[in-house]
Length: 285
View 1 (cartoon, helix red, strand yellow):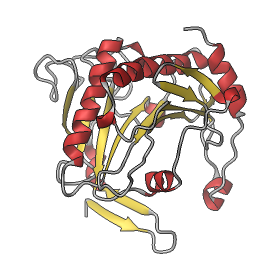
View 2 (tube, rainbow, N blue to C red):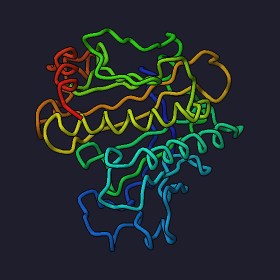
View 3 (tube, rainbow, N blue to C red):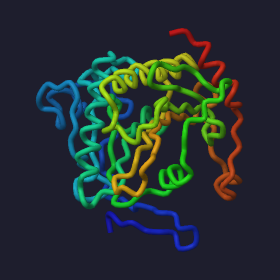
View 4 (cartoon, rainbow, N blue to C red):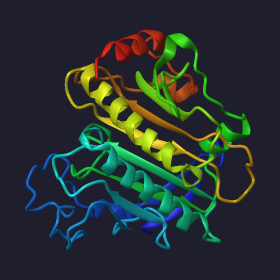
């Protein structure tokens, strides 16, 4: 059986068994544009484009509920190297696809995310993200919104802010390097963002990712995802946020989640959040 959703009978953990993804391409360290499926003329981008979305050929879920988002046709770019105009086009596409997928009767939650770097599982190095449209609200965002999450902007953990957004280090992350970006006023999802909020978000994400890339003086492998209001209307007053996390605690040195942590469900972070925020604030832009 190539694809099946199972639930651990003791813990209730949802596990997607996805044997069909074993054959997907792995070009994470590839620098050649001639073999990249996301470059212009490649398998997934036959025509020139600014931004592009398409259905994932190796989806972990059925019924066209998994998509790929291409940020730019430039193979050697990253989100942090985009212009504000180009980054805004990406955000507009995130919002458009969120709206379209959330309107489906079989979708309860839309997760926009990115894995950058082979160290966190990216299989193709071309700058891109993905979208998974779940037929339920996964446990983590369900808990987040059930607890009425709102930005925790304690001064010594704030990195930067503009007229619409704030970036800060979370109070207690299981990841050694972690930053949250949140709107200064309550907004539930990408679709609800105004033109100004999208422009300011583009600027904030570019700046934040560049700070993270300067933290260890090399491109940081990271995972980024957007927490946004479920599509089923069960949460009325959600406050969206964007999380960017990395397993690195030093340059090239990952903090592995170990047996005591996995076994107990309690974690040990060697990086003090307030010290991380101070380092990120000190990086000039």
